[in-house]
Length: 428
Picture: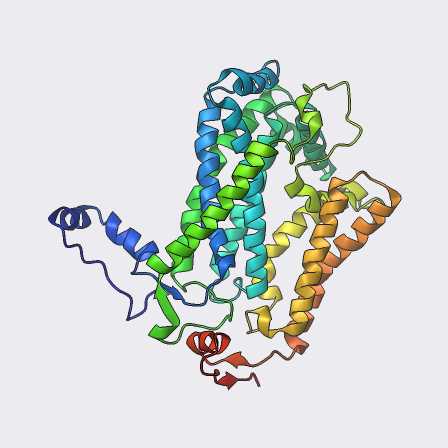
């Protein structure tokens, strides 16, 4: 984000001048998160969730490295090694619960971050690459979380791996080969555990690398803001430090209070009790269900119960599940409206909240036991999910008449707090 009024780093101490000449890390930090990075002055607390996601990733990497020192990726002892971590390793219970609940906190923060981007149009030009890298991060997180859920080698871990990888066999011709390649055999066993453990350890570092690209791409056009209009003058911005570092500090405080409450008072609340039973390939659980953050996509997967156009229902479900995520890659072009923020798009705002309700409904279906009512609700909710992105948003972009936009960020802020009313510019 290059503005003529952005401050440039000029070290005053001899040591800092020498370091800046040899390895300009201080200059990089100053330009990335310091006074040298101007950001819109009207960012609300929903912009905290990027920093919160970074903090959650840090927790996962640190706790994961220590847990890997004690975990044994072998089907005969994997479950016992996790129990040993809980009972025999100093603070092992804390590390294991922090890692398990940290995954839920990480995915929860990222879901809010994504929906904030949907509401304020952060996927629109000129930030398409920021959005595409963000969706890539989301896919890496989901792959990491799935493989991590298998590692405790409890009943739900084993059968979750069996069911989810089994869906790949629905792909014509190559499906069974892909499944065997993923598992290293015909059923989850030592080979699968070793593969999943290796990738689960590696992918967070890959994710961290893509996050660096994500932040780099963000700094080129600069941050979006609740009005969705571009920065036009120096008064529209403030330095990131100290204004937003302080605001992020408040968000981090709230985040760690919620995290600590979950960790110390309800560490097993988001888990499944069957995963405290050792994996048994001869005993299928009555209800196989993934972690809560997969429930909406699991509901889409289960919504296809009838063969259609000579394609098996199982294959339709697999394509729909992956399509529901891949669809997000095309969102910048599915919604061509020049107005970013849904604060100025009344009909699109209604559609957005209907999408939120729809995803929550899918989550309820995905996490619940299958029944005729749940299956019907899941099918309707899955149909609406795709309808929202493929039909409703493109139509609204062409037909909706947005509200007038403020002339500048500064005037919008002044108007909100009782200052001079902003000049209005309506779209033709």
